[in-house]
Image 1: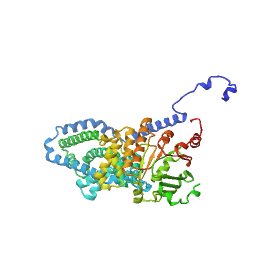
Image 2: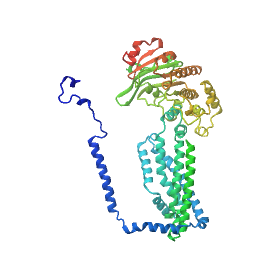
Image 3: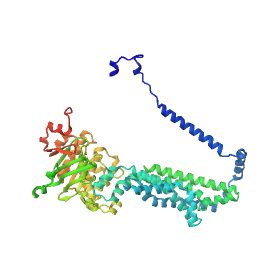
Image 4: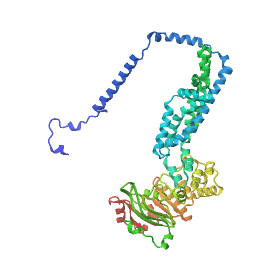
Length: 277
Length: 265
């Protein structure tokens, strides 16, 4: 309003020409800085990684040689050795997933802030979940091989402890996303805490629960395939033996068997998940 | 404000009331009371409507009664039972005597209509029965009866998320009555419904609670509906009761005092 009373010099239309830019100069500068840091990081990484040029040049030839040795796969080797190991791998994945849920459900309930209002318990649960995830399943397997000795038991526990973090985190997020209204209504009706969880919360997280369970089982089938490399049972053991004895036609049999199982698991899980919602 | 009113009334008047609230204060943050000394006695029958602008504490008042919100101080008596200070099992036993209907219905979407109605019995049935869905036969028969009464007999096995808003609120009413409550609290039960459905749902609420002799306290934004169905209007503003009387007594200047301004009238 004031600009109307005071005469403006120069271009009288200047206040009407407004400019729009997506970023302020400060933002542009910081975006440029981020790019610079990324490029510098890549250059630094390439220069410090010490790639031996001869080995790199040799790689295609080596790979071709390996493939030729692998072909044809030694199918006769499949039964019984590979087959039994494969079944054991599936057992490890399934039992590991089951055990993981026994641990993950209480932790998820403790970690969800709308279920467990006690702050320190939230932190303890969330820390346990992060700790579980931060250790790779092969490392868990090494630990449990040391405890139980080599074999499937170590594999089962490795899978279970690795999965707890993943399942617990997703489950506690599903719990935190539940609508508070139904719980409030059941509480108002005099329902106990257990009844409130059973009838107000469980129906809401049920689809997520089964989705997570199937998804994790699918991942665990793949993870348990390599556990044998450190002696925790399953098909990895057979694979390790075959590689150590340079029996490449057997290696290819094992790899194909793993591929087939993973594909079948994937198809089953996708089918079941689409029916859940 | 409440200090002069906290003295106990003669026993004769006390028996007539289903619910008595004295000197009720609620502070979400210390020093900033949302409810500033509410005194309210609700008769053992009929609908009491609470009107007032948004944010004036109507919802908080209802939630203090069944302790979904913890009152800061004051007394709330349900037919002689002091509700403030109850804990654990005693609180649950008191809550099941109080039915509640919500603005957003608060049904469990993925359960069937029947299970939603039966969940009104969760304060009565043991956990294992709820888990195995083995509700007592008498409860199931009453649930069917109530579904008939709210006009949804053929929807018993449908999932709650397949219902319209009006149908959901009917289920909400059936669930609340399933408790055989001694009083029913309704928090904006029609605010999410279209005008016609709102009237139908209120009509149903009034009819069923009258038939079962359940007094109702209802928070409502629609003053015309409040006047039509309530036998008593309580006007709140700024956390206090500033009007209390029959619908006929509610005049324009009262509405001005409750909602402020006058241009909207």
